Image (cartoon, rainbow, N blue to C red; front, top):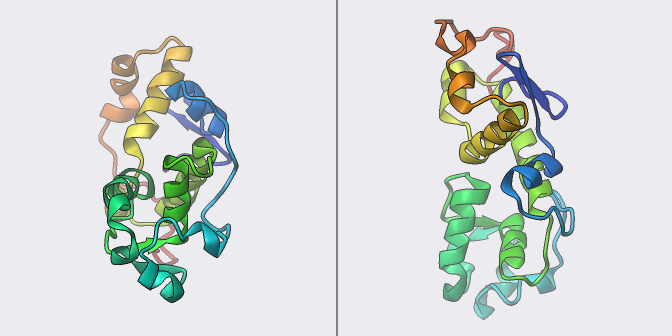
Amino acid sequence: MLHLHDGQATLAGVTFTLTPESISLATDIPNIGEQWNKRQQIDRQNYEPYIKPGYLRQLSRVFPFQYLKDDYAPLMKLIMRYFSCEGWFSRLYAYHIRLLMHFTRVRMMNIYYFICQSIQKMTTLVQHKTPQQQFNDIYHFSLIKILVVHQLGLQGITWEDFISREFFTAPKGPSEALHETSGPSY
């Protein structure tokens, strides 16, 4: 993630690509559905099936998890744990409802486009943090490893051969090129 720029990263002499298509190829699930990102608005009527009736008028951009109907709570917890990766389980955002719409097959979205956008946004944020903050804040790492292993396989390189390269085994200090010491860490 620290080396990703414009959808590509070169690491230990190997170039990796991050696109919805590369995610689809690596996971072998079709790259279909509506392209949607977190900044897009959701019509209020789309909330109705998921929110307890007494809370519909109280909705805002962010709202308490308790507003969600109990039937959807287990699925929402999975979504929050594996797709939003924020660790805030007490509140919901509009995009959580949009993901719930996808997983309940009400309105299918291109999940790879969404995840690709999320990883790219995370990359930009992580690249401006200190090395210790970077270590604590990498999300989607299982998906990233699936992508790396798949793209290595396309190039005839095994994970074991890749990870044993000198780039990974040689001791090195924090990467000052990626963390600007003159600016704030976000």
